[in-house]
Length: 251
Image 1 (cartoon, rainbow, N blue to C red):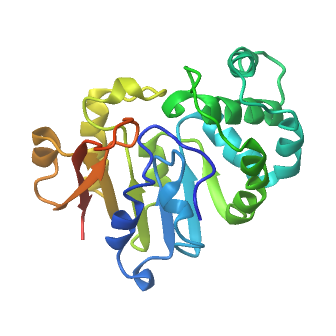
Image 2: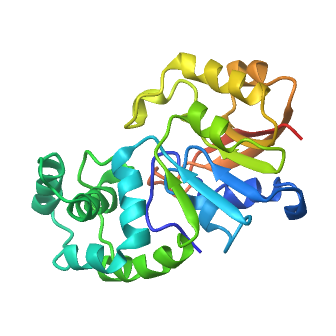
């Protein structure tokens, strides 16, 4: 199935190539998405492992996932009068910061910001039409898929420490090197080094997505590096530019 949202750096286009690099299912019993985002890889299968974990450092994003998992009806009710509307979009931006809003109210407004912004940047109104009724109805399928998924809101280092075992398989899609400013959450250049240090001591297996650049190739030179290509899906051109990316794994 597809994810119910878009997100900056989402893996809708590359998810098939990423899943092709997964180890045999019999070799891991826990699957952990460390930088969850829209969860495109998670949603690509009915179930990746007996235990599944979705994590993201963005509190509003995690709240949206949790509310849809446990309260899809309440979120849908809150979205009853949703429209493709510039005014509604900017109202949601202001309202989500108001103290006293319930988790359901925040989740609904964050859903509006993602769905109605350009490139899911949650800042600028996107000038395109969407079937919002269909998007609302889809939330029930998402809730069923998330039924047994553990949803976390932790820094990647703490999350990996909590879930690392020899039978664990981590998928990591961090903010790409030199593109950190485009993400809504703080990820500093030194965090790339910190992530690499954490992965060096990993007991389980990992698959890591990154942009193709000399810095990342040197940083992970001792690991298995696979080159893949994707199109730039935000460019409105018939011939879309193509980018080379890296899938890095320790097995």
